[in-house]
Length: 112
Length: 113
Image (cartoon, rainbow over all chains, first blue to last red):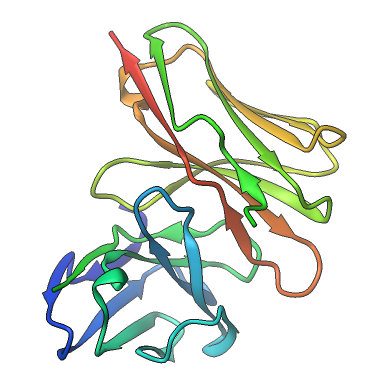
């Protein structure tokens, strides 16, 4: 138990669906992150929020839309995804940017 | 272009022996290095880190060595235990601009009894 929770743990969605991934951290951290992990690839940083402001957007397609309503919650809104977007999506938090990150268990997303 | 490389996708070791996991990097501006451990169906867990001003950091059975001239990092686990079986990721942090972490592809360690 790392203090970072993610829901749902598994999600299957069609290419025309809209869904959201949720992340919550109970650690009092100020930075939150979304990563994508595809098979046999390194973890890819997607978005970073620091003090609820987005500080990094790694050329992620617009079909992924993050939202950080407060320092404890982070969402990833998904719409019109492609099958190649199927992956494990990991949320992480850290006390501040650049320090050790604590990861949630991830959401296994399958796009059909 | 992968800045952090873990060239061994897997490693098998017997219980009680030493496990050595390796990581190479290309960016000399990295100033902080971390190792994470990941069990199936769980997110990565922070294990140990080292600053670029040091060449060794030890925490119990885990020791990380940094060779800056070779741009090489290694994690030693001794003695290895079956519960250490997991995927190990090394990560590096840049010290210019936004300090994000860059991860390697991971090495799967299997420790057999």
